[in-house]
Length: 454
Image (tube, helix red, strand yellow):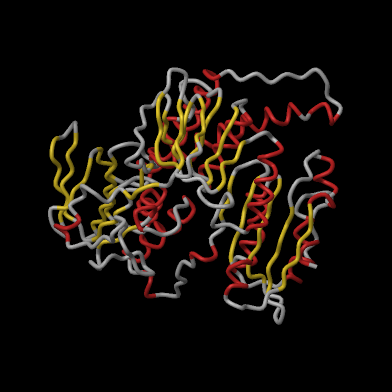
């Protein structure tokens, strides 16, 4: 009898677990109440990157005269942009849905709730209540934008992230609250699309969890583009006015704008699942703790993706989903490598892009760890000069004794693509000489990686 595998949530983790387990012979049922492909992915991540791509083209057109092109104009058609986003997300959802069908995965549309550790009840609109019995269950229900008690998102003047892809109108002046990854991407996105932008920075640098040198490069670019930074300012309230909003800060400062956008993190979708009925524990923040196999405290119940409290990256969700499927099917008894979250590459799609992987410089020095740090600016790279965008740098961190690559940061064009080389080096324990001795294309931005590895 095949393993009965029930998955709650069809985001990156759920979809990957479903298809991988089905290919290995499991009887898979995927429960989803919203969108196949994940609401956080298809309603947040993908639309934001589509808007950033449009904004990037507009910025490129503005710089075109320096590359010998004159009399170009870039005007935004918001309706065309909205239709483009719908086409992209629609295509991705259809592809995911067709993949489920091709692998024999049963998709049940509705909200699933545990009745017991082996039973899940799904309230569906078409079939009514559907009871599912499971040998293994994966909870991959994702997360949603966090709204503080001092703000009310009305979808008109005060927005959460999902209401901004795109918003009803491009804001005249957007006040962004939150200077983490999502916040700075919104700053870049709307500034590129023509909005005036003020960023509320609760600490003394944007991207407080990132390398200070990386954060400084982004701040400098924001200031060059006319972004107003409120540093050391914690938002405590938002007031509606006749013409817009006023964001009140704890130090008495006020930021006026036409719209405000909340980008202050997310909360896990672990409530309302009946986890207590299954005996599954959650922590104080609502995340479901898991071990190296993504198992919860109930061994046949797993959690993956944002709800697991690990890195909130789609790439991590995909990897977790695959590992869960393999564990459910017993493949962990063979040669097996656990996920190392410290080696996950991440990117921020600002302009210039930011990407990093592995050990952080500040963390290493705080631990008193010996480190070799090498850095090369893109201003010395031929391809960057040809493309007319030589902002940023490549920084590589390595062990001075062995030469093994421990981490790295990239600020610059196509950083999200270039970081893959360093991610592979970190994961495979390659040495800097392995990068230096690779015969790379010339001229190419990747040459900066070899230069930094020297």
